[in-house]
Image (cartoon, rainbow, N blue to C red; front, side, top):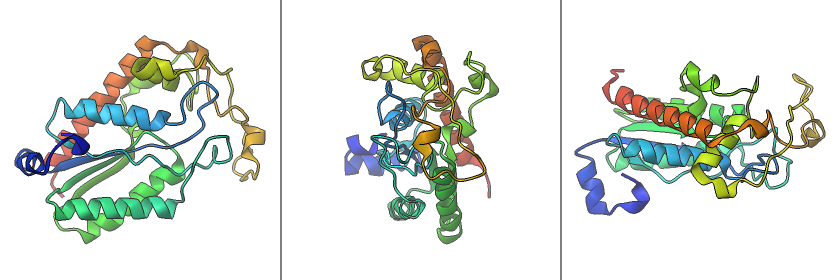
Amino acid sequence: MILTDITMRDFKRGLKKTKTLIVPYGSVEAHGTHLPLATDTIVIWEAAKRAASKVPVFVAPPVHYGVCTSTGDHPGTVTITPETLRRITFDIVRDCHLKGLRNFILISGHGGGLHVSAMKEAAEVLTRELKGVRIAALSIYDILPPEAAGLAETRNDSHAGELETSLILYLSAGLVKGRSREEYPALPKPIIARDKVKYWPGAVWGDPKKASVRKGERLFNLMVKSIEGLVKRIERVRL
């Protein structure tokens, strides 16, 4: 049940079937010159909706903005602070709890460390504050089975690389504008670089040229199955 598509009557009826809400988190973030800025949002939004067609669950509209550090200065990226993300999460979960929801899956298509950490920090506070809640806070990449990584021919494939490009080719091929060149960040970790674009000019981590619709379809189906499994798990777990 997609919250933006149902009526208040549908919502009340839906609560008799499930008290679980998926909240997808994405980003507006540079993904090379070939992928849309909304790549992370597109992937997790579509996966959550597909999961909802298979198991009874509510799906909230996506949180489109995320915490972006390594790509924060790249053209097109619009980042928010961890505090903002925590506050958005607090407000969404608290109000949905008042409306009768009890299980919350806060799941991100963006895997940034500070981004996911902010989601988890908010979940910790809310778990202690709200009565009867179960909350999972994670990136979709945290729960994919090992076979997902095996879909990539590129070693150490990641951001805007082979698999993310494959996902967008499968979900919305018209948004893919050619292919960026193979690239890997050279950030001087653990030192924090002030000019991150200098060390990672193309915002690509992998080889987009090895992407395919078939790989995207297989990875997307693994994502959907992983979300389905998490819905079932959060509804039966005893805390």
